[in-house]
Length: 119
Length: 176
Image 1: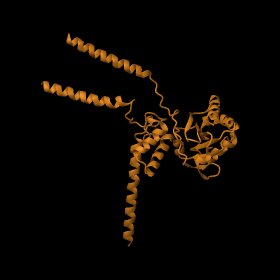
Image 2: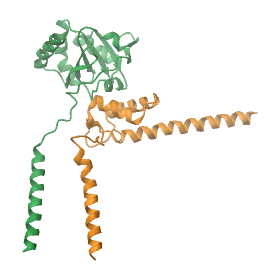
Image 3: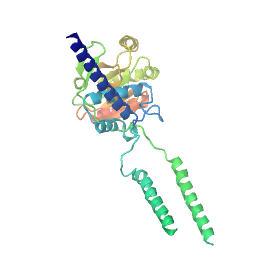
Image 4: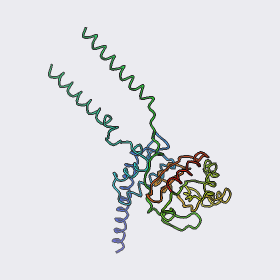
């Protein structure tokens, strides 16, 4: 009988531990894409400033509440502006930023194909 | 001849890129969220500094007129500087709500008994998460918030000045 109890406890702790881990990796993943606004050049994940520590807590609380990654980004963009996320949205101001690499890729590909077919 | 054209073309492109980048150096972008008019979630709960009672922050706001929210801490030197202006706002019968940011209750109470208490109510923010709800990045920060729409009408990052005082007075009158 004690063996079964031990097993149940062990399983319980294992499960608990992996759940906590899962949340932490999700917090890390989100905070890596957040700019620390008072220590620019660092992400919230990297920073130990008061602001960043609170931000990590807010992200964790939002995940505990069952919020999705996108919802958390939207929430913070609403509070701090789009500047808070490292990955900008595709819009009027940023379409060149997103499209230029694509154009260069296609252009380069065409150049290579032309070179090869000439030979 | 075609070599020359290629060279000129290359040179021209480089010059154009150079000019664009040079111009870009002078473009100053304002990334501060000072002008952002976000809404505050009034369903937030917080603990009062003086009574340890947990309340809903919507109870602190006047539904018909705007309120001032000030984030402060006893350890923050600029907060000490701006305190006289908050006292002046209090004398004008303005509802000021204090958010005590990452502070010890003892120090916070000492600070207020020493310099005066301009706040109608002070709530504590031990972990800084409530300040995030207000879009704050540090202390001190001051907000004018509409009780009707929950929206931030105006935000001051850093200590208040005597010029801000006049502006706040006018904004409150305009939005009353």
